[in-house]
Length: 373
Ligand SMILES: Cc1cc2nc3c(=O)[nH]c(=O)nc-3n(C[C@H](O)[C@H](O)[C@H](O)COP(=O)(O)OP(=O)(O)OC[C@H]3O[C@@H](n4cnc5c(N)ncnc54)[C@H](O)[C@@H]3O)c2cc1C
Image (cartoon, rainbow, N blue to C red; front, side, top):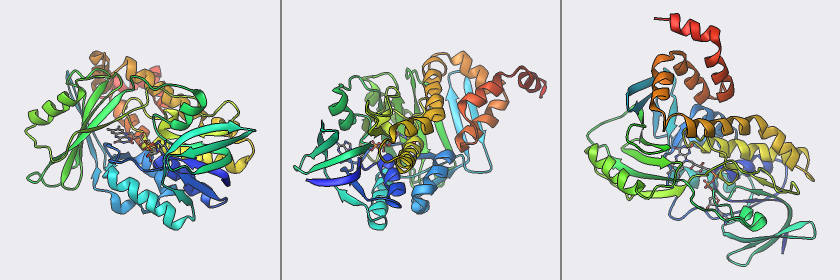
């Protein structure tokens, strides 16, 4: 039986970010097998994501496939283009990104890595015992759990079942005849309830996908049809993965398990963007542990308070605004000129949803906006 001070479960962006920060100060054991086949993803990294990523994986730069300065939003009543001189987002091939991130952490940070799946977590005399599919057993006081949306750690501890989780799917299409593309598309116009299609350009291919926060059986057929309507040909199969349905508790009852990333439901629910919050929560959990090694839970919750509040707001927006009430989307996007400015600031991580909405609803700002040509 191995004994360690801090054990991180999972090998995705959340766990790897926590491992990077912790490895500078303490011994770290990382237990987790990367998804096989690899996790399907849009591979879109916003500016706010890049800001956090630089802290844990500065070598990400060579993995960038495309810099995107224009985002076209299509909705039933029209279109809206958000443009900026600086890139609004970047794209990576997630399959490559995760592998390189893991390699970087294992090769350069002295992290002990067990590429196995955790099957059981039990509390025994104030400590946790973790068992893997290969029979490895590890005893630890603290667990940082970044094992994804259907977290096994949470399942063992809270005895919960994950049912009817939302789903997102993606495929790749060839762009041989199109050259370099500097525009990403978010398409809300096609009757996907609580969801949208995206088209993200990479170097020689397009990542096309669809996600919905309401479980929907037809999603795969819909994506197939969407690709055909665009006159494109798939070069890959259509693959999917669940999205979190809600924000869950960040810590276990005793405060000794810290859930990060999808395991805590930390995504921007309006966009389905989760890498930013995986990286951020991984960093915050590590900082909390370094501040109080016996009881990091309360500090972690405190550090994440504002982010969690903002993400809860994105869930409300996702449910009540764009996917159902096209009229509101029209008003917000088309008539409120300042929205563009705030959207850019949000994507760069310079503004929270809470503050942006407060400013947008500020009567003085509204009048200023209406007076502008
Ligand atoms: C189709 C799709 C498109 C998306 N597009 C985007 C996008 O463009 N931009 C964006 O920011 N976000 C996107 N997301 C969301 C994003 O993928 C997630 O929010 C992000 O990957 C969360 O990171 P994580 O490290 O918390 O979890 P994950 O990436 O899910 O990683 C979990 C890790 O834990 C491991 N693991 C799981 N179970 C166990 C176990 N029992 N034992 C040990 N290890 C285990 C897994 O193998 C994996 O390594 C998309 C999601 C989907 C499904």
